Image 1 (cartoon, rainbow, N blue to C red):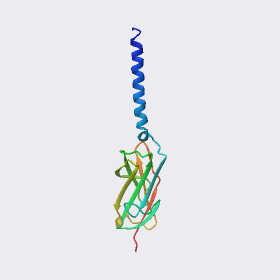
Image 2: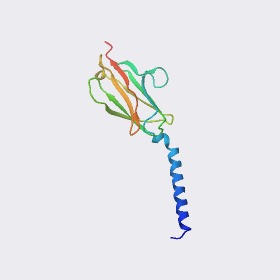
Image 3: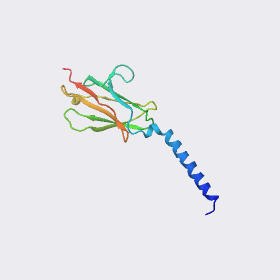
Image 4: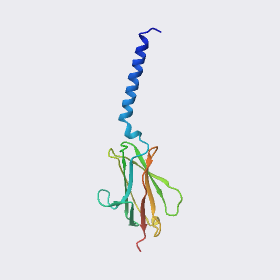
Length: 144
């Protein structure tokens, strides 16, 4: 090997490392496995209004679930996981997009078969390989 070729290789390797490092810095929010904050809640309206860790509905009502993750993880998707009253394991439900602001939402119309006077449904959002939200408790009642 000639002496001038070695510094060029070293220079190319250094440039490649700097390029890769700058891409990782730009993509850092998406690479964070454990979010700093990942909160879910149940609401009575699609936008705005009261949203808390526990909410009660009558069967036939629309249940609104929301979540927010920090850092935002925009352009990724989250799975809505649910635990039925009396069940032992969470199951995977819908897949929802995550906004550039880190927000997720999903809703469903409850049915009579969903109602249980004593035990809540539990919901959480999960971003694959990144983490999961806290649990939102949803009571779906008969109202009779």
